[in-house]
Image (tube, rainbow, N blue to C red; front, top):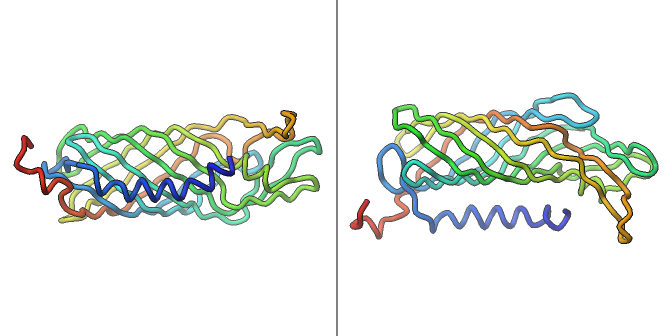
Length: 225
């Protein structure tokens, strides 16, 4: 899991840069467009040792739109302070503290109707992890905390967007699936720790602006579109 976690920022950057080469059609005016933007809001999460809490979140995204469908790639950082969690090992329950939660999402989008204020829906997948968790128990391990603090998720989102010149203002809600318990084993395959640092689904409410970077198909407009 640590290798996966370390590779996430590189993969996210490659995905965002790769959007420049993809074709898209903006749903409201029929021209091929792609967008980059930013958002801010709040994430609600829970841990084994902490009830549901809301912390501020911010991030960036790239949106490619094709007819009434699209692909949204986003990276978000939810900024907390001294959040608490735990996992179990042979020595008992080991406490862990962390501050931030980082989330990477890839979502297939649908724009079902065309109107001045346009609704959209999306389903996708992503990876989420707590940033730099610190094990505070007597036999706790930061390495184990890192592994149990990272999880994949399925996601659903819905929102509203409207055009402001070359800008696209939006507000949206995103929910992720709850992670299942994980186990950490040693080289002999013996279980040394179990649990998850995050528990239950997360709920994120955000708003922001996307900026249109122009046509992604300027060289192919004489075709059938």
